[in-house]
Length: 101
Image 1: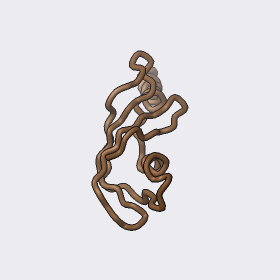
Image 2 (image 1 turned 60 degrees about the horizontal axis):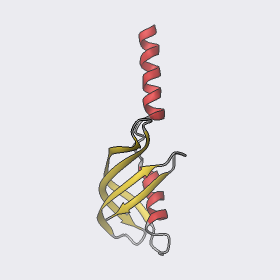
Image 3 (image 1 turned 135 degrees about the vertical axis):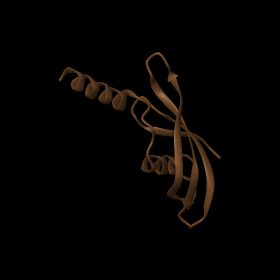
Image 4 (image 1 turned 45 degrees about the vertical axis):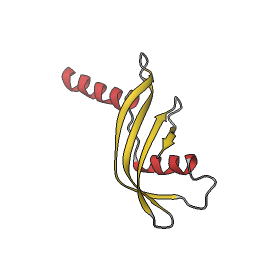
């Protein structure tokens, strides 16, 4: 029983305080906030997006993890192109895109 409880607690800790890899919905919202806020075009959908953890801004506390994501971005006009994103999860949990190319 203690092993099950310990494993559950560890899993909860890793999910709550861990790397928190962003999901597609967060990425689309962050892309629109970052790059397309002054444009009529909006991010519509991500395809084949793969994200990976890169590093923590504060490694001792394991806070503010940074990510790189690669995949395809579809815009509201239907155009699809390859995209690479570099982003960071802030202390308040918000995902912010630092660069997109």
